[in-house]
Length: 66
Image 1 (cartoon, helix red, strand yellow):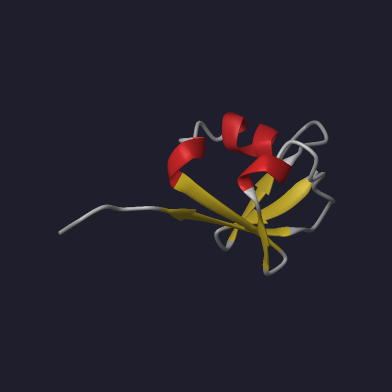
Image 2 (cartoon, helix red, strand yellow; image 1 turned 135 degrees about the vertical axis):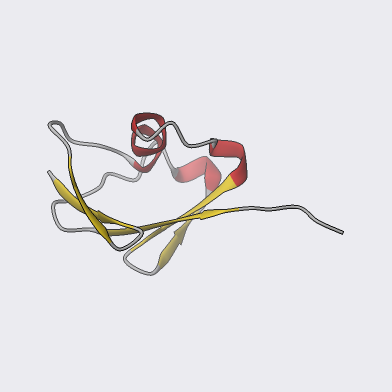
């Protein structure tokens, strides 16, 4: 499966959900927002949101500051 993740083409050998993509990339799920094809995926919907070949995924890391 080919995905465009944050503008970079990446290949995966199995079907993924938004949640399993975060696991595969070792991204901290609690601190990352996920957008697929310009649609924000709610945290409680990540495990049900299947990704398709060619999807554009943006992972936005939350950063605290003050």
